[in-house]
Image (cartoon, rainbow, N blue to C red; front, side):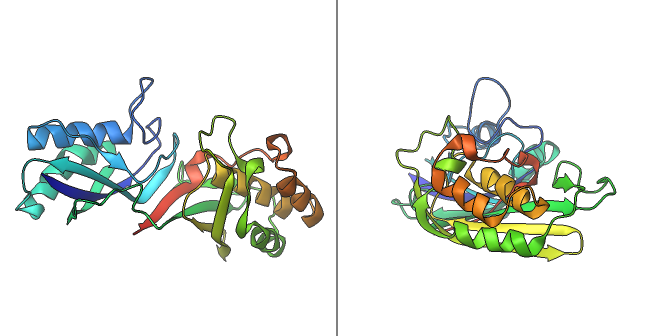
Length: 246
């Protein structure tokens, strides 16, 4: 038996998310079906984590077990991408791994990026790839609020009611914001995230940047540990799984 890791890039716009489910087409299901077809054996694909409907990935990590050794990786990648390209899924790399490797449980941390385009003009090139916000956003206040998110704490305020995690305690290693002209890039790094945590944090940061909340109100919302005190989550289209480190 052989274990292989694949690095996957995808546009999540037309998918109901990563994880296989009955109510629509998923990235996991699409790639798994293609692997099964190419390798001519039933393949189960394990991802580093779920991404919701509409969320994108620049480097999702997944693994699968196969009876066959993949000797010609160039040919294998070309064949996989031939079938997946029209669905806006690309397999960037395939790597042979040790038997104890697991795409989810072996991960040391995950990095997500959220993109906001802050301008009056509508989006042409970035439709479904960023959150278009017309109102002025104060980046200085946004950065101050983002710093408060860093560290180990109870993130219940930002946790979806359908989240299945046993504990709301997480350690956010990084929360940074960079503005390049009209594009605002928010980066979060942690070992793991709660369901809708990133989008919920971004929604609250936007409230601060718009002047709807001051820093005191932001702190009160965060420390309340109550979902009802969270701002509306940012839309999925601006969120990207950027990197998974092992």
